[in-house]
Length: 125
Image 1: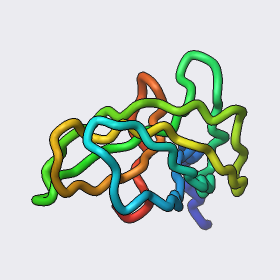
Image 2: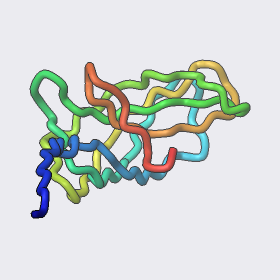
Image 3: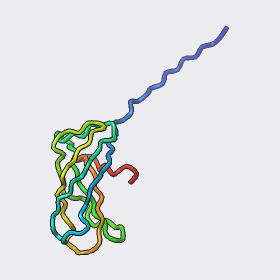
Image 4: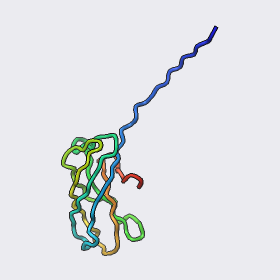
């Protein structure tokens, strides 16, 4: 006589993932304290739609780093996406970027932010 043992396993559905790629052409120089417009091509490579409205909308923002790699500005100005962005979709958004007031060498990293939830850093960052 064979003994059969049955077990149950609870499987959780995978959580939606916010993931993005960013492609931007930033001017090589800009005046300290000025604002420049930068077109940024966003691609949704995650499993979640980027909602442009609602309680936790997704916006484009950025971080500035100084020449030594230290954060100079973490919470950059927000740019609305202008509509929801589905999985695999791509959209060009023009960001109004506030250049740091102190002259010096800086580099910028664009990032989406799901307001009230967290940042969506570039893949591999």
